[in-house]
Image (cartoon, rainbow, N blue to C red):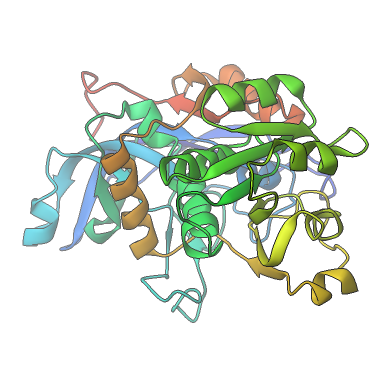
Length: 362
């Protein structure tokens, strides 16, 4: 039987507990008419996976495979022409279901169900295989390795919506600030915005991450731990456009208070996360300058397809921080979680599950 990694229940309060990884057996795959079986070759972590292990995420499940990002090869297909057309193709998987193409949010009354680790979706990618509807697949761009392809789905989709759909400034020549560079989503925004011709600036509390970001396309960067970092950022902006058009943020905190002094009147803060806490101040100064704050989370199936097409057209390569090999390598996989817990990663953390030469157990 195919196997996967899930979490095992132990006693502990949310935020204090840290659920251990556990190997579980999956049912033998039996795809329905429109489904396919993907032999997974690589899967990538996201912050939600760490939150699941800490019981800081809703509806966690003991027994559901972890992770939402995956790449593999279709090895079995249901009888429908659509499913059969995917046989033997290298694919990446849309990381959630319930959201087709509505720009405002998921159409499903049950909401958006992300793969991996919860009761809301019984599938995950930290597994030998996954059975999924053929409509949720995209072919891997030929220039990407399996590891790079696995690094793309959730962070890429989140970044694409926050930048391309929500920032209002996905145009050449616009000045964009991406906060918290080093994480998967922030790096994807940097990649997308640079490829679109924007002038991209970044912030981090780590000088080494600022240097790396400049090496891969950032026009400049500032250390947010330094007093007066806003003035240092303005000094880096090009003449005559000494202002930001948009900020893409995943932290929250004081970004409105700081950002309103940097943004043009009517500038946009596109926010995909609030890692510093679930609340933040909204100040009258932002109102007076007509600043807009736009929430952005994940993205639709259409946006996923648009994002993959852009990556293919521009021949972009997701940044991978580190990989480990094998589902049996629990110690190695745990070190990836430690990288995320400590914030030391620069790019995505990926588990190499198998290679194309390894036969599946199907």
